[in-house]
Figure 1 (spheres, rainbow, N blue to C red):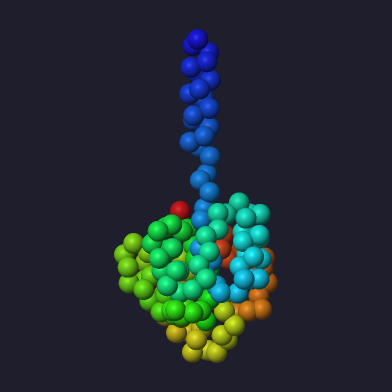
Figure 2 (figure 1 turned 90 degrees about the vertical axis):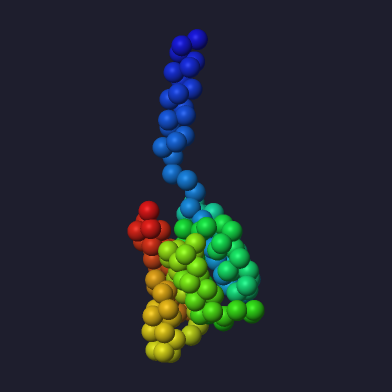
Length: 143
């Protein structure tokens, strides 16, 4: 009987030591891109939550407390900068790292978005493995 109890304690300790699945919120209205990111992130062990417009992005960020956010600049309802402003203004979401992933490549877009609080900025088309590396760095730094 004691052996069974000690085995249960050992299993519980091992379960507690396992890392919890990290959540990435992908905010983009491009279904093909969302599918690609969901596949790539899932293969890396991330749980992916999707928001197809800016309003949904703000709601999902509050509800699911993601470990990082991939945010497009051009989306319906609220654009990426409006979403970023709201996220950074809310103490509950202000510390969540945000990577902008957008086709906008003008200097004022990049610098302005970084000044609003984005942690990183990638221009489409992008290298998927580069995004994975940047996300991993931000998620690790947040721990």
